[in-house]
Image (cartoon, rainbow, N blue to C red; front, side, top):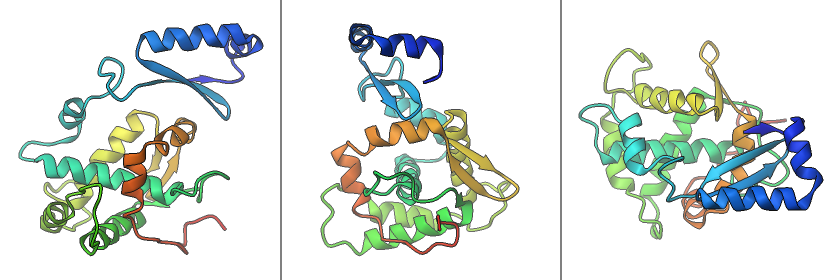
Length: 213
């Protein structure tokens, strides 16, 4: 990720040929160049496991011992719920809120799982029943030091997103902010038809106290 005020970015943007050459070089490494807002990103394609994360890589980073594929699906679902709270599928004029409280995120996830269980049509084949069963069996205690809690699952995902410079988490207040890197990536993320289909399964949760005025 390079800021747009970097002299190198200005030099690249001055001539179309330079950007074309950079994009061709990125394609050779199975990546694409994204210019979003005030930064420039090189994003690995979905099947690029050298510069990106494969599903196996993510499982190794996110799952604890004794956790299963269902826990992995839960983590990805929780991420969808988080993105929906900030951007939704109507994203275009900017993010929907400045921050989200961790407790709000947890409530949204609970509601989204319940909503998914009630769907008559599930074209994305999201395993709601398995996820709901696993989530319900996790302890609801807010103590992160306890194993087998919902909080532990959320904290695992938070740590990963912070490490990837995708969110800022203020532990004392429980506030979650999106970073410039996430803002730049969201347009690319919402172009994925499979992800959009998953978004449509989430409930409409407006009027939150921590949303933008």
